[in-house]
Image (cartoon, rainbow, N blue to C red; front, side):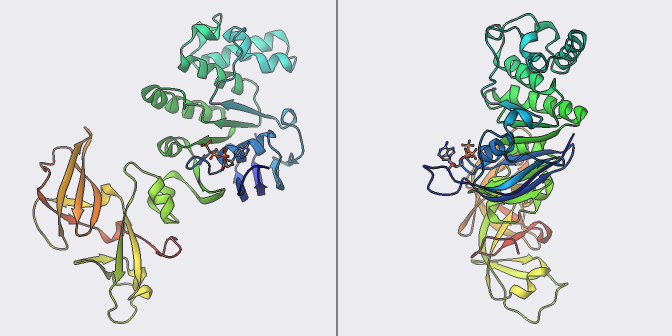
Length: 364
Ligand code: ATP
């Protein structure tokens, strides 16, 4: 196993009008599962391919363990890759496909067989070994691709959207399995996906990318609950974080222990005490749907809203409500008896509010 250290990686494609990766620095610790996630075109694949040795950076370095591999060809980097497109060989059996890397490395026959059997066992392919890829389902083919990558015991495992060809249910099942397998192997893993739920589920840490840079790096709960910038809150979560404009009430002296008052149109709610230095200035407030308290009755600190849409998800009731001039998503209990047109009251716990500078979009 080995850490992967990426320093100041810059890449511009000859035909590209901006940098595909713009001075990216990132360390994947030894044995860590790190996920790169972000919208299409943010540079995830480019970054992964530079680590793999399939793309040459304009500037910056990649180290694997103690070795500077920036100029080494892919085959000398001690890593294995799994792609979205499986890239398994149609003319070979499952056994031959899984053992391909070991064949290339001229691993002795007995060891070859035992390692292939172990990898096949881990991926539940034990009874498929004599079949050809054409006889397998999409999910099984993807398992072959993963088995082939892990069998070689490389220092680093790189995966680029490995689940994206699978249907939603299979994707979710295989996701949990992949997590278990990689945890058991303890291989340092860098994993690319545009699916934020997959990123949260798999990563020890998640690097959220935007326009060639890392917007935030943290544990799944850190990036979900404490977005460092508005973009991260709006990208992660189903539904994404709600945002509304407010002004910090310009009252009194700065007192760092007392909640401030936030006014959003005609609504006034308590805001975090650390905004006391921001008095009189506008803020963008972010709040997650599950953190808004919704009730059919008025009460202290509550303000009214009108239900526009009620969507039962089974586990909860997802409401779209009109709250003054803003539209918010609110997660209510599954049996919450609200219908379009109904009036409800919202409570916004001060500890659940995230505030951003409207000019820079950075967290305050
Ligand atoms: P996706 O999720 O859609 O694969 P991504 O986050 O992996 O996106 P990249 O594929 O790394 O993003 O692309 C980053 C930027 O570089 C994009 O603007 C893309 O158009 C550009 N780009 C990628 N590959 C090439 C190429 N071979 N030639 C020119 N531009 C490219």
